[in-house]
Length: 471
Ligand code: FAD
Image (cartoon, rainbow, N blue to C red; front, side, top):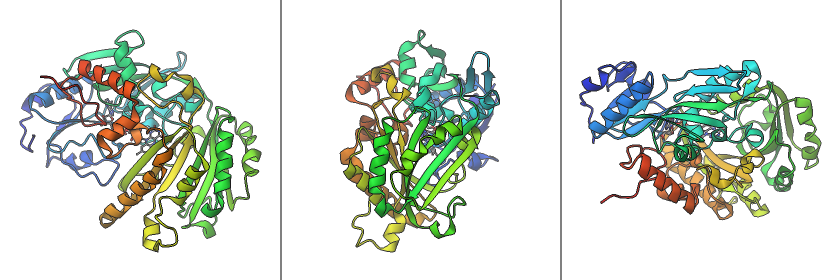
């Protein structure tokens, strides 16, 4: 496959963006992604300025037999777009967002980050469903589904896409919406980057105002099982403006916790409310009735602050490994496994083992997510009660194996209760992971779509849906 000596003259001719080769100024910066474990060296980075650049890059990559990766925010945990020895189509210069407040629509280029979308819509009190960390890419998040604090009210990010503009594997530009290329429109809402390069998303916007409320009640993990079961039982009746959350892990020197609670294992239950905070506070008594927390964090904040509050803790340049599950039910045994964080045997654990245990979060689904029939979009498992993500973060490469083993052990302890996984939470599960993300009939339909739109599997650096092999 490709080497570091690809002749890029043909690509550079008429290319409006910048083509970077190993050794060029900026090459190392632009091959770096969110997860510091990713250290791959593309032969060519094509920093595209528009859809014509994207089309030229796709054709160039194919002509030269290069593996092609497509980069938006660079937040896929494995850094999928960074093609070792291949071509990385870097969409990040394509980050424009145009808003029509009267029509409640936003047109978002394929390389934009979530923060750009939120910042462009919030001056009008508008928003659409986006993820919880503003430096995540609109591209990867939306194509895989797109879970966020507005999803229970307005559906996933992908449910709010009115149309896509896409560059195909042949370098043609097509549009997909409910009537034009409707098969592709179905597949792009949850099927990931398997079918082409999306150069523009058209989103529906909603009048959500600018206010939000954050609630977290903290408990020692050993006292939290009953609380967490009670929290789970409240999810079914929760208003759609509320997204229930839970967390377990080791605290840091967070200013919202007293110093005595820094650097110790804790669990939290709570919710995020988008809208009038006083209305959101009405849910608090039900949560407080579950037990006596060691600390409470209840905070009014702007929607924009909500959307950026985890930007630092979820920042770049750390080593990372994630494991995810979807749960249709979350029985008490799952609650206990969640709180144990995959510790093999608590009594036998050494401090070093305990320090390796990942933190994990739960986020409630339901509401508008479940209003959409499961076969309406490629996104699957709409009946999910809660999503689980175990997120390991560390900095010393010597800890890589232990950290990843601990996260795998944790996920394995919960797997018996799980019913699938979110494609955007997959890491190195490979084909079995893709089969967990999409039920069999969905995968058959996605494969047929792949056969039609990308029969040569040009777009394979993703959670891949391979085409049917041709004779
Ligand atoms: P990239 O690594 O740039 O892209 C990932 C893949 O997406 C690429 O390999 C490509 O196949 C495809 N792709 C990206 N853009 C395009 C495009 N324009 N056209 C075609 N293909 C494209 N998910 C949620 O649903 N909700 C959350 O709140 C959430 N929070 C997160 C927070 C953090 C800190 C992280 C790291 C991830 C989070 N995720 C969340 C998961 C996230 O949705 C995925 O990691 C997603 O892949 C990130 O998209 P990206 O564009 O940043 O990634």
